[in-house]
Length: 288
Image (cartoon, rainbow, N blue to C red):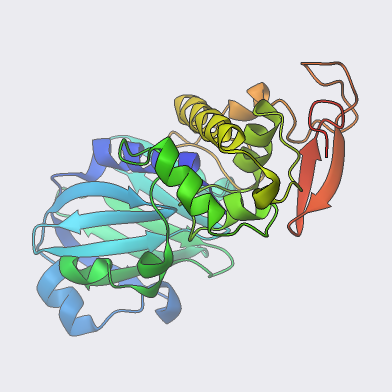
């Protein structure tokens, strides 16, 4: 599943290309991919203009002039491909990014009045695009549960420490992956930030000092910002908004580097299992 930097990269690509366009028609081939009332689509989506492309956690929010939002989750194999005077593909890196569309993986087609199209492709059919009034977006079960955005200025060291300590008996990696604690952080960036802060992923929160947690917060922000700058990771299921693989993984210090020397101390990077996930760490730098 895409993490925060990947979805942010998709958002910035969409923002440049579809904001200001008016929707002429929307078609779909799978009800669960587009679970919307046809009358609402006709009244509040068709004929409306796209006013913004936003993100909350790992969800894209395409806002419309009708005061409705197309709330979109790509899940594991989703793609958004824009085809107009130029073309970009974002999402799962298969040939649908470059082939003629629609194809057998196309679930939703949004046709704009200028003749361009936005295709929502999803091989495994786990993703979805919901049409909601703006005021109901925050009331969606997912939105009710998800924690603060880690890159917001308001998300300070103090708030990070407070939220992490709510799960004082859990290991720190499990807490970083908990979307109710903070939004959008997944396996790659958890491993990377823990390595940067010299914290073992299995460390129990109550055994950590505030100083350690504040350092972890700073390192997490640095990792996320670098990844956005590099267009996200080259994790198997993601490419960036231009349809190119992101380059962050080239800068990764531990993720997928098992058996290689730690760039800080020279010890051999190990892969283990923490919080039910494959976990990369340096046994020397990250003592348990």
